[in-house]
Each structure stands twice: as structure tokens, then as C-alpha cells.
Image 1: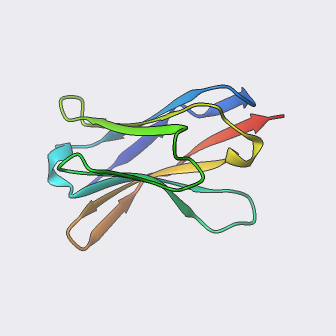
Image 2: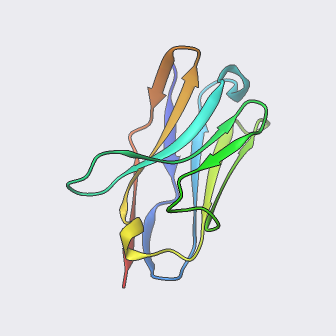
Length: 115
């Protein structure tokens, strides 16, 4: 059974930084794509960033230049480094792992950015 555990969320002031972590049970290399998504109150879940097994990355326009997704296969962990945070970045951030046609989700970590 695949388990994804997010951590690193919290309360930060606008302009600050956070690094989110997603620990994956078993080998990270099993998954074709790893991604970070977020869901703000009253809004749909949206893509933040993805990274493929080949290391290709993709970012939502709203976070380009402010976020970096990376992975450490030795630690089976995916990271999302966020900087220049804005109040509109407030959301629950979820990690997703994709292996062929199957998606696996973590339970999320809350990021709150105060103005």
C-alpha cells in the first residue's frame, strides 16, 4: 500500500518561505510523476508543480519563479520549496504520486500566509 506523508506546513508571513516535504513509502522510483497540489477554502484543488521520473518539472503560472519542486530518491522524498509567499498561497497542500494510471494522495499539510 502506498503512503504519502506531507509535512512542513505552517503559518508564515507574506514574503516568507517554507519547504514542504512528502515522504513516500517504498521506492520513489516506482512513480512516473510526483506532484504538489493545493486546495484553498471554497476552491477546487489545483496543480502547483510536478516532477517526472526523468526530472522534468512543470509549474502553475501562479507559482513560477517562486516555487521549486525537487526529489531525493535516496530519501524517497519530494520537496516543494516556496518563497515570496503571498496570502493567496494559503491552502492545504497535497502530494500526489502517479504510477501509470493510478494516483495516490497524501492527507495534506496546511500552509497559512498572513498579510
